[in-house]
Image (cartoon, rainbow, N blue to C red; front, side, top):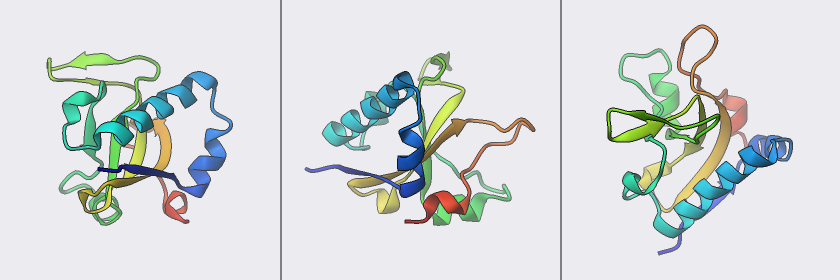
Length: 127
């Protein structure tokens, strides 16, 4: 099976300005996805989860845009509950219909300075 990855335009532009270490983390995620897809999250070092939380004001936006996030390991991974690892920074991606293609949206801190879960703006979703 072939798994494909697309950089959405705004993320592609920002990616070129990332430190090499951050670029390498994204490229590691891409390589793992291209080999294994997303049928088994345990293959990934960081936690993968949908970016919508029931009852949150952003629920409809995140769910309707099929937004997911991956804990990328920046600055480092932290073991949580023995099952998965999290990190301060997450990579947001679209995974429409849980298919064989993902679109990379952005990479940012997991939480805003106000303590709210960060979601990319709609501008990041423009093609």
